[in-house]
Length: 237
Image (tube, rainbow, N blue to C red; front, side, top):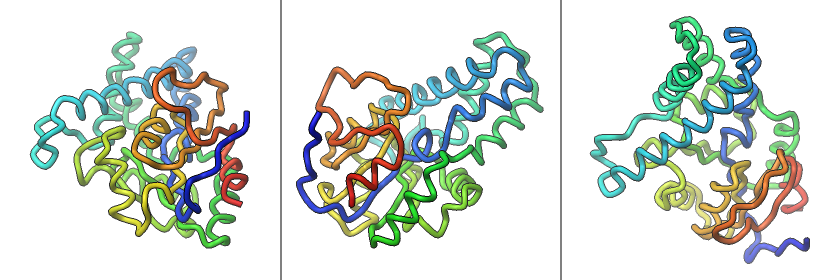
């Protein structure tokens, strides 16, 4: 399949964090230690519930973000999702297990190609950023733990607007933070729904489809698709 070229030269590459730069399923190994035979199920259900809660919160009070009665920081959403998962799987929800798994979530394993891609982009004069549902503290922890600090110009959290992706307001934070227009941005996500939200907003988008999943059956396809973050370099250079 021939991929279309971006409408404008790309000035900034903006990455989703969880699932794109940081492997949200890597935590399954620690979950397996606490709950033998359930590690994979925990990591999968935990992630699904986490995303479900962000959508529920954002859809329930979309017109009053500054005073939202429903908003929870992503850290709290993540813990609530873990607790639900353990309850759903009928596993003993001990304080020690929850604390250990949450501490590990704060420093998730990065994908191995990340640093090389970020280094090349920065050497090429491309602005790099994260746009994430993650709260500022947890993003800072993950970025530092992965050794990415010097290769990211901006780490943008939706926490300030109290609306999660895929709200248009969340994607608009990029233009409010970086002096670029939407069509000068390459937005990179491993979540096809996130890439679709970014496409609808007006970004050039790259879906990192590591698992060989099908495209969403609504909306346009991402501008580009690849199997790893190295696809970013093919698109930019």
